[in-house]
Structures are given as structure tokens and as C-alpha cells.
Image (cartoon, rainbow, N blue to C red; front, side, top):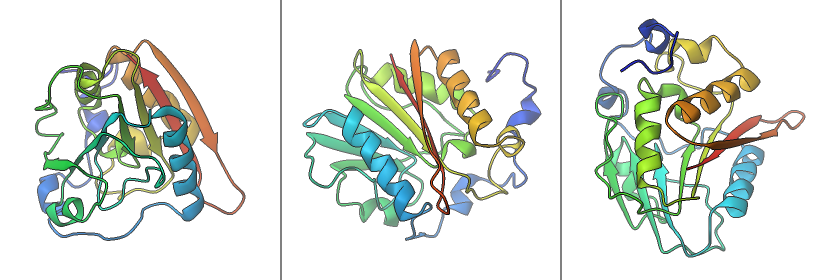
Length: 205
């Protein structure tokens, strides 16, 4: 499937074409953005995810950056490393899936009140297909929050992502969302002096 009209398939190629499962085979118990950027993600989640709701945390790890003082009915996690996911205390359950090989979510329609994808969108080779699936599993009006900074594993980030910088990447994510059928998008930007920047795109079905 063509991800965005007019973009060649090479736009979603990676420098390292080996299976992603090999790259994520060993755990990385680190955070990929600094404390200020993490606080910014948490503040967005606090604003847009309903307390007591059912959430989907995509491309996650051992931390989810959800506000510690807010309880949710459930948090379903996804990632690529079993040890990292098993160590995440917020997850009600979790699953491993390579979205570049198979972007179809094995989840029920309209079963979540919100979904987040933090600092990993740059690795998606089939983003529109995955985002369409996210829209399917969200309840009407539920938010989908995609956040990212200026860090990545360069050999695994797709070519088009590496050709852009923050504001243009924000526009690209919005284009993914609209191509996937999300009707409304909004953005938030956090660029503190001396800290990690954070760009956010929020969509609703």
C-alpha cells in the first residue's frame, strides 16, 4: 500500500534493512528523552486521556509516561522487547508485534478511550496502515497522541523522517493521520532552552 500519495516507496526505506525483531532483541532500560520532555508528554496525556478510560500504549517499553496520580481502567501496551514490557507497572496486559511486517492490530473495534505513540513514529514503514488500525480500535471522539523529539536510532528511522526536522515532521505525522481517516488534528510544541524538544500531534476519529 502506498503510504502517502506522491511519495516513493524509498521514502520509507531504512539504512539497516535487517528485521526489527533482531534490533530490539535485547532490552534497553533507558529513557529516550530528558526529564523535561517526559514531563511535557505526561502533561499532554493528563489533558487528553480520560481518567478511568481504557488506553492503548503503542511502541512502548518499560515506562509509559502516564501521570502517576491518574488511574485508568486498563492500559494495553505494545512493544518489541518482552523484558521491557514485562517491567512496565502500568500495563494491564501487553503484546509484541512488528508493525513494519504486520500493521493489523489484533484488537476489537471501538475498544479504547485513547492511544499514545511516544518517540517511535520515526521507525514506521507503514504508518498510514497502522494509523488506520488505531482509528478502528478507538471509540468515537477518542484521542490519538503521537509525540517525538529530535532523537532516534538513525539506522532504523525511515529516510523521509531523517530528511526533515521537527516542524516538518509534525506536518508529516498530521498527513499520516489524515490519510488514515482522522478528521481532526491539532499540534503542541515544547522547545525549552537547553533541553530536548518535543513535538506532539493529536488526532480524533
